[in-house]
Length: 629
Image (cartoon, rainbow, N blue to C red; front, side, top):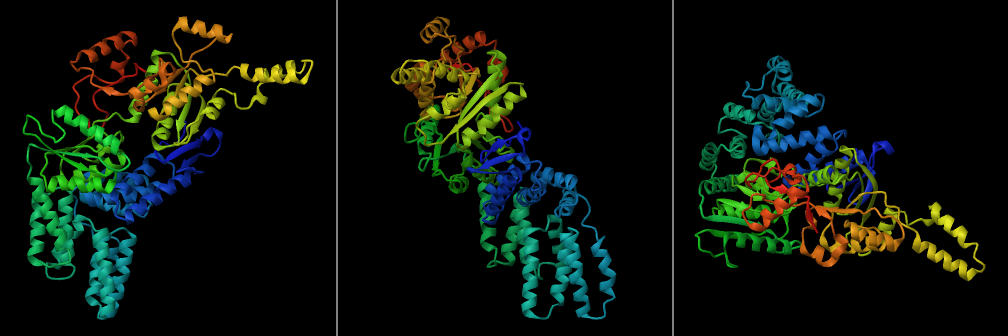
């Protein structure tokens, strides 16, 4: 389809229809403007120290706007954040892509320098700017001339991406400067460079050169401890930070050093029977969190006070439906409760923040979020939820390969869940050479859907229908205006819908589904599949009927769908996950029945091996496309 797949973005046109356009938070804009919008959001989050959001937005620019000029900028920022957090393992792929694909970008030289240190290469070479100015510096006649040369050398080193060389030259300028105010300004510049851009190799080089008695030794030692902490050299980090506190017990970074040492000690201390749980028990998603807690308690045989026959202690924390709180609660569970692992959170916005904090603290986190890339955060993060992409693949496979549907329409809500599924479904249908015949949307607060349904079946602009025009001409032949008006009214009622699609995809939740299916029934869109009942319907309508298959994702999986919609959702199909090897009778009967009626389609949709969390894919459970409402 050529559209952007992103929960914040809705594609509104494709290259076949003109320049790419997207809808961001309800505002239509060009493809490039969409990328710039996400990049700005990432920078804003980065400046606010919300690194989890910043990383997610930079990643979206890279993955979802591959043709944008913002991609190298996003790669540069993303690789720097990941390098500071996780060193080479976390950032290597982004550093390599920046250096390979965008060699002229301002950040490419730094990327190459960091890749050199990642690969265990030699220290930063004193070639280029550093060597060029060395002879001139040595031949300078006095301190003032040497300071001027060193200043130019620092600028040239930065221009070439040699951060370590720039720091060395700036330290020479600092040592030569006599004016206290100027010296302070240069010192601040050096500290900003060290804190924000200096790689680990540079930190070690400067420490060896300056020792622990000269400026900026305090920052260098603390920076080295932070780097060791983030790359999980915990023993070295603990020694470095303890050494910092020994030399600067009341230093500027003493509180931070003590906190990191506390976290290192907490990571070493684990209570095997302490299991953490992160759920939104208050806030906008409280109802989901409370249901999830009940499910966990039921699965573990615990009562409402989390007591049971085993010695397992369930420690529950409320995320308050807030991303920052979710991350803080991960820290609390590790530091205060020494949990062996954490279940949750549920929603992506919480799970992202919690995942990065869990990875930092080295505690296993198992979330049921459906975010595609969440498990890529690191080896301590696991996802046990079917992604929207996996659901759509299974749904379209079943619809097209098993049921033989080829033409589809989409009726979706304008919220992140519906918009993401819209694009995933559209792309998957086109990938399989199917057709999208119509697309309509509605607001999250809408309660009537007549207008959208009429548009799908060409009942909205009657004057464009040739069959309606023909009926009106016949009405004009009536002998008087009264009979003409009655005839025209009847013509509107009798005008059959133009249903040129086999399946209708509605990616929404039960609240709207019952109202939508009622509107479909009112517009004579038939979902009945039973031949006997179809004959009755055709006889009643006086015409042939081609039934439509209603389709949905896991948002449909609720008893309220059938309770509210009844026969209006008969024969609908939707996806959800379950363990096909479960030993309960109901599951096995369903597996046998669905296998025989769908040529074992569920087995092809997803493997049926033991249910364990998968770090880079959906859980090992079947995506059932044969669940009938």
